[in-house]
Image (tube, rainbow, N blue to C red; front, side, top):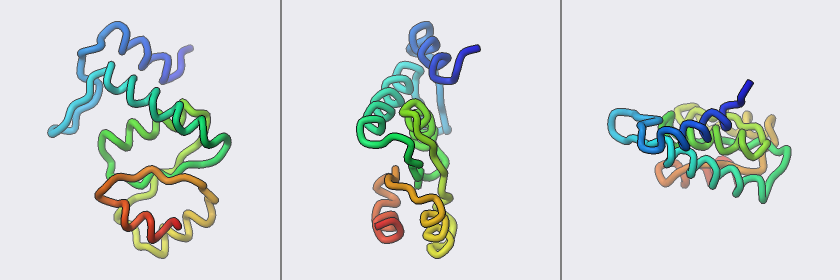
Amino acid sequence: MKNVYELLQRSARCYPDAIALSNGRDTCTFEQLHSSVRQLGSGIAAYSRQSPVIIFLDHDLPAVISMLGIALSGNSYCIFNTDLPDLRLQAMERALSARYVITDQAHIQRAIKLFP
């Protein structure tokens, strides 16, 4: 049985220009997805092992790339819903003891405030 990354790798090799992800606005081919996942996964692996990573993004293409990249790195992740109240997010972060947060420009200021 193959894991998700092996299936993605095979799809990128066999169907590099086929659409892998789409949200109606943006699309990502299998080759683009594979490249992004590999880059993120190796970057996280270089800094963190066995440490959960918070994904603080809207549910969109970057979140999917983050989930796959973190899994490839050997770490676990927890998706924090950006719509939750600050006190709830801070309690979740304390319980998780995560050392790293993946976010974007839309949420960076709030993430800095919530997860110092």
